[in-house]
Length: 151
Image (tube, rainbow, N blue to C red; front, top):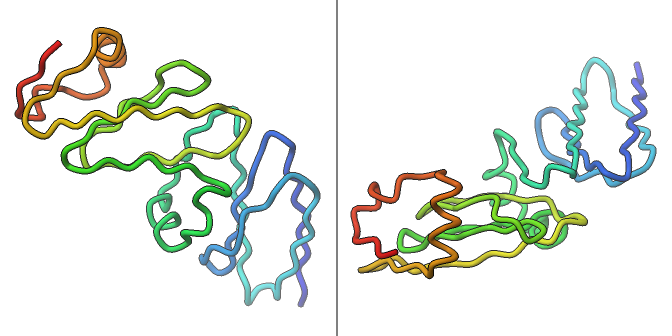
């Protein structure tokens, strides 16, 4: 038996299409008719609101690794090494500090994403503005880095 599902993706949204649990593609704005052999085939669609630019999904890391073609087209990926910290600005406002050896994924959309990276190799020194931003965010504990932090 055939199953037909219609999905509408609004202009401020994107959707991920999965068939039998496997990623198929990103659905762009518009009306999408999805056909499956029901009950033999499971079709799932997850819709995301781009007004919140960070992509948070249980399989987010896997998706950007297994499907590198998504980077730069649908996602901006901010990755740090064990010796880096990154400050992420969205539309000019600091929104995230990416800890060492971490990854954050953001939807490519109307938002302007700027990333400032800091090498924390031996001694970590931030300018006054960046230090103030990190203190305001209080996302992670700088003491946990086990290095000298100069402000």
